[in-house]
Image (cartoon, rainbow, N blue to C red; front, side, top):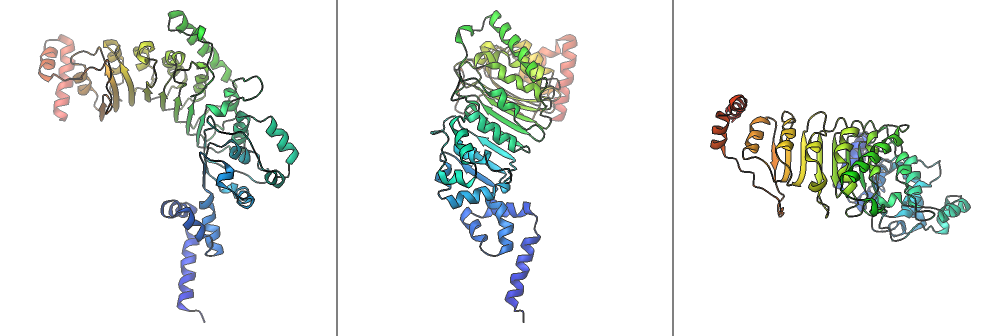
Length: 431
C-alpha cells in the first residue's frame, strides 16, 4: 500500500525532473551554496542527474592552482569526467588550463565563457605523476610540458571549444617564455572561434615593448604608424570574420610602447557596435581614428579612457575621432580633451539625431552656447556626463548654459538664427 508520504515524495521528484535544465541552473546558482548543491546530489538518482550539470557549470581557479582547488586525484578525476558539463571557466593557473586543454578526445568540453589571465602566474606547468598516468599519455604529456608555453595552451583550449560566446584574455596568453620570445598574438587570435563569439576582452598590460627609438608624435612618426597599421590589415585577409561579435574591450600596455598593429584584428569584426579602449600607448592612440573608421562600419558606442601618463588629447585628432562612426554615435564617452573645440563640436553635431549618452570629462575650447545648442538638437539624449566623482582635470571647463544670451545671439544670427530658433522652439515645446 502506497503511503501519503511516499506519494508526496514521488510527486516532488516528478516535478523536479520535469523542469527545464535552465530553471534548475537558476535555482542551483541563485539559491544554493556549493555545499548545499553537493548535498542535493545525494537525495536520489533523479536529483543527482538534475543537479550535476549545475554543480560543474562554472569552475573558477583564481589566485590558486588546480591542486589547491582539487586536492585529491579523485576530485581531479571527477573534474575530467564532468568536463562536458562545464560552461564557464575563469583561471589564473596555467596548469589548470593545460589540464582542460589536454583532456582525451573522448572527454569533450563545450565552454561558453572563457577567462584566462596568465600574466602573473606564479608557476608554469606542473602535473603529478598520477594525473599523467590517468590521462594515459604520460610520455607525450611530459614531452609537451617541457616545451609548453602559455600561448600554445591557450591555442589548444580555444581549438577544443568552438562555441564560445565570451572570451577574456590577457598578455600572458600570448607569451613565448622559451625560444626566441616572438610575439604569438596573431597565432593565438587565429585559433579564436569566430562563429558564436559575442564579446571579446583583451588586456595588453605587460606586453613586450617595441623599439622606443622609433617612437614619437612628429608628423613623420604619425604617418609611419598609420602606414604600419594599414599594412597589418592585409594580414587578416584570409582569416574568418567574427560576425556575431558585438562588443570589444581593449586595455593597452599603459606607458609601455607595444606593437600597435595588433589592433588591426578589428578588421575581422565588421558587426562590432561597442568598443571600450583604456590605457593605450602612444602609437595606438594616434591610430585610433584611422583604426575605427577602417575596421568597424557598424560602431555606434565608444568608451575611451585615458589612464596613463600619455595625454591622449595631445596626440588624438578629436575631429577625426568624432567622425570615426559611419552610422552616428549612440553612446560616446571621451576623456579630458582641451583641444575639443568648434570643429570637433561640429563633427559631434553630425551624430545629434542618434546621440543618447555623451560624456566629455573636459572640453577646453567649447563655445559659450555649444551645450545649449546640443541640448536643443539632440532629441534622443538621455544622459550628459562631465568629470567623474572625485576627479579633477587640469583642462576642465565648466559647461554652463546661458539660455537668455544664447536666445538673443541666435535671434540676430540670420539663417543660422532661424534654424536655431526652430530647435529652441521645439526644445521648449517638448519641455
